[in-house]
Amino acid sequence: MGTGGPGEDLRPMEPWTVRRAAQNHSHFKACKTPRGRDGHKEDAGMDLEDHESDAETELPHILGTMQNSLAVIDGKVDLLSYDGQVEGDYNAISQAQTKMDNTVVELQAKVKDLEAHSRRSIKRVAGIAESMAIDNMERHIEQLPITLLGHKTFSDIFVVDHAHCSLVPRPLTGALHHPVMTKLLNYKDYDAALRRVQELKTVRPEGSNISLYPDFTQHVQEASRLSLPAKCKLQVLNLEFRKYYPAKPRVMVDGKLFLFTDYKQLQQFLKHRKMASEQHHTHTPNSIRACRHC
Image (cartoon, rainbow, N blue to C red; front, side):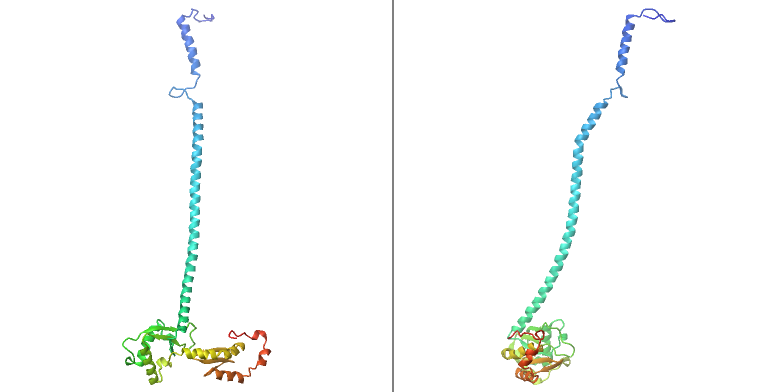
């Protein structure tokens, strides 16, 4: 019913009008709930909860993936460092192997030298300059006798089984050459070479006298046994001693070289030098060297 204001329609409301107003009021209350652009309700709280739950489930997976990536990177770094270490180890191993190979070559040369000195069938050829046979001593020895002594001296096949020069340093220019130790497969060739050398008396290739010695093994051993007393005295007196093939002693005294025919002559030389037993006691201990043969 109206209030009676001016211009107000005081007519009683129809029942349907009251019902319509009530419906409009209820509709107003319902409209207070937020609606989206499409006319539906916005469930903001529910969506936020869904995002939080998704983040909680995806975050461990992301962290696990990152940890796996870091582990892979660490593995690659370790592999690179290991490769660098392996390369360094390989270089060290390569250098050690090269050093061992050189040592093996040196030991083989020493063994060859010892075998050459111990063979009784070795013949020595003195006066051949080592520079004449730079590449191959055996080939040089095979060609040299035929060139010097002639083809008729030897058989059709002249073969050198062994030719070796000592490992000691090469002599200076003008000094005596080291003997070359040789072994021929055919003994008749060696016998013929000795006879031919005796006929020629002098063989001088490139200005050097070449001498061919027979097998003096027994003679050299006997001379070495007789030389022990003299060698002991020389070592005590710190005098340089060497043996000229086959059994001739050489002594260096006051910068001069003395060559003796045998050790008896050397003993007399030592007596003339007044090497008496009283002089041994006057030497200081530092000037006396013990003899390894005594």
